[in-house]
Image (cartoon, rainbow, N blue to C red):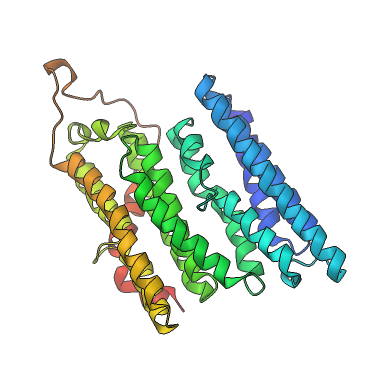
Length: 345
């Protein structure tokens, strides 16, 4: 794809998300979602192979179905209440439909099946856009309508997502599919806390964006598409290998890294609200995610897959990605835990 066209696509992508995030009328929110979907399709299918075309088709079908459901739920609500205001979703069937539509947009279980497949058919950079930027518009709609959405549905979706995000990632060897299941699990945590305390949800979203962008930057620079590829990262940069290990452990939610903060606060809040069985289940299923992060960290730093002499070292080509940005993000991912009280103000 030529740079001017790529720039137009990225700016359209940004415009669609911003329109949705800043609108109070359901039709404007829907238009923003549609612009967003149509802008990313050429970026996904730019690789010109059957895999990327299939990924773009799957993405289009699921997102179009979800957008149509959002429009249908808002029309039902307007029919019953006479208002198109996003914050005035008082008709219960509309709220249930909207919850499911946004779950499909985000890739929450049980509507998650498209996400690993689409990521596997995309390049690493496109996968990064899908699991970070593309989550902002639906999350902002959840934030705006949270007072009217059914808490039971959101808590159920969150628990199911954290479970499936953990189970699904266990037997994967492709880093993009692992990141897809990681995204499902993280979004499950955000959905669980959304009906209880939205500022923790926003903080979790921001930390998730930083951690995922940092890890994808490492994968793009080291060109690691499978777990076996990560075993050769040390030949490219030993420092990067060490940082990547800490980054993976932070994504798993181990203290004293930044990734521990949202899990800690969410579990504390669930316990305060007397949702102790849910808190225990969430903590248990997060161990599944931690396992596949630890496995990735282990292969990156502590193992070397069988190699011939010719394939032992990687070629060091000119970097296409800014390494200072990657180092800033990875430092934030590792060292922000002491600033948790300031983030919540």
